[in-house]
Length: 338
Ligand SMILES: C[S@@+](CC[C@H](N)C(=O)[O-])C[C@H]1O[C@@H](n2cnc3c(N)ncnc32)[C@H](O)[C@@H]1O
Image (cartoon, rainbow, N blue to C red; front, side, top):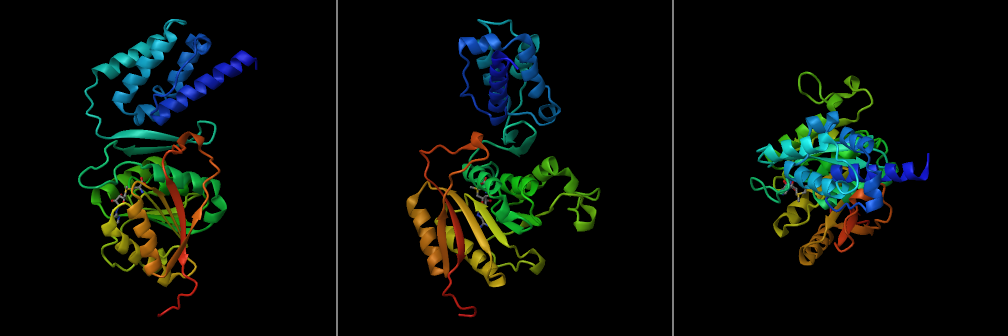
């Protein structure tokens, strides 16, 4: 492959990834725009808006309009713009989609083969829940899990406050776990998780719309969705007691810190070897420190895990944001029954 072909491939790859990521931060130097020939523009369209995935699960219309306008502004001075790029922009301009929900495509690794598609909203709160979008801590936790697959090997995992399900689904798809249960307290969120499982792991649900049990599944892990509200001390069925608990962006409201610790304590009572991993973007230090104190008051201890490696460089959380991944275990001095 010539240097210029390699450069064209890199530009194409970067444009496609930006489109999937929902990012408008790309730019093309004149020499890059020169390489966006008719053929390469078609390759861009084929990998994005003309792909079966995007036709079925389109990205936010408002974003598409801005992306295509920006792309045209870079290419137009140097190359003839592909008819289908104009056609797509015109149809996006005519569309009256209200855009409350859209699909986001999270690319894993270098190529474009591994994509997690999530139906979500951009809004912080919908119907009284923060669970209808993917938060940065979810990307951080999924990224860390992918870089530390051995921790999850053959383990039973339970996710607290799953939201639309990005982290749990990524782990179910890419780490060789035994099973995973995604939980939340809000009916709309649980419905969204089920939809997202259906998109990404269609083989995990049988014709009767039930999650498959071991014998029915091929290579897919056992995946389930369950209502779990930390405010209610519901018993977790013994077959669902996990080896690992995960949670992303669940430490944000002082009123739920004690209920959250109660759930952890109950799970530790059932499995002393339990490991808990909680990822946070620290927006309010007081709330986060209060959580650390609440852990201590509940015979739980923690260590901070370093977050150096990244499999999924596209998702890196800006370093300006304070972030933390905690591993929580039961205090060694704790005596059962104390
Ligand atoms: C900020 S969102 C994080 C969602 C997801 N983990 C992510 O990072 O994208 C917090 C989640 O915790 C859930 N949650 C809040 N209070 C809860 C409670 N008492 N019991 C269970 N889940 C709760 C919310 O419904 C929401 O889905």
